[in-house]
Amino acid sequence: MHARVLGLVLLLGLGAVDARATETTMMTGKPSGTYIRFGEDIARVTRQFGLELKVARSAGSLENVEAVLKRSNTQFGIVQSDVLDFVASFSDDPELRSMASAMRMVFPLYAEEVHLLAKPEINSLADLQDKRVAVGSPTSGTLLTATLLLASAGVKPADEVEIDTEEALQAMRDGQVDAMFYVAGRPARLFSQEVTEADQLKLVPITESAALNLYPRSVIPARTYRWQPTDVPTVAVRAVLMTYDFSKPTRYHRQACAMVGKVARMIASNLDWLRRPGHGHPKWQEVDLDADLINWDRSPCAEAGLKGPDDYKIPAPQEVSCAAEANQIRRKLCLVKQQLRREQQAMPSASLM
Image 1 (cartoon, helix red, strand yellow):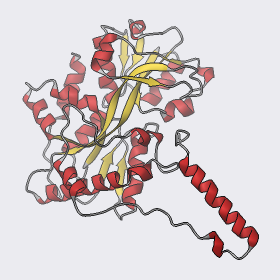
Image 2 (cartoon, helix red, strand yellow):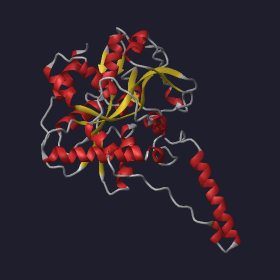
Image 3 (cartoon, one colour):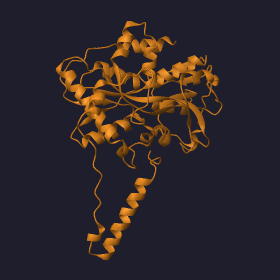
Image 4 (cartoon, one colour):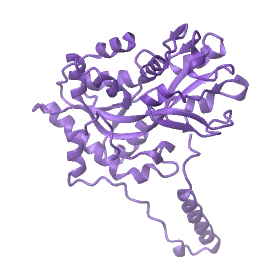
């Protein structure tokens, strides 16, 4: 196993969290990623009920784990499911065992496809041998996934460059790296908005048996990105909304636990709202809040909120009666607007980027 990743996880440690809960924070990711979009979507829901959720940017999963385990007033983080899988695989290590025991799941979210973007001559993981490969920033989940995939396939790049995705894309254009990994739910904004046919880059299939032993199969459908003409088979991890084990009988833990339960209930009660066009990222269509994940235990705080008496459902907008409009032209215009609104709500939200 790659010593660098293990050392990074060990450095996260497990700090005591004991302070007064004065705000609610969710750790997400880079501005070009999917985590921050999901955080913003959830914040729009909580704001409907007077709860201001701070959506914090980060380098990714590993930083988010550290923040939730060690920082006060940071109750939530979106992380890759393989982070806990990796930590749990070293259960003989006391520090890692403590970390794993403190991590709790609020909800499983969506599949995050592994994007391997490369120059035209690279067609597989094996072709990364002796190449320069961007593997993600030092505190990202992409770094962990890329390291595990390369190690499992027995591939040794000439250089594994630890830079974030925006830097990696520019490094490819400048000829400094030959390929880059990016773990993100499709469509990833960076690839949708910043990559074009003129870059002459492509997504590389990940179909090796070693990779499929680690991660479930997935696919990035053709034209997910305008420069991508065909389906690209790959593997995926699942994004998880995580929290801390707020079980100590302290004032902060009680407050934080109640907040976790409240936010969990708000998300569950408004999943249909989040799936409507214009309300949330397209990946909300794939969210299964009841999916089983190995190694992850549901937070008792979230369970309590889901079973509690409070109802946080956003009410459906009431349509104005067009019949009450006296002017014939305005009445017809009202009916046309209502019909267009219904058709929009019935459309899938795959066009949202």
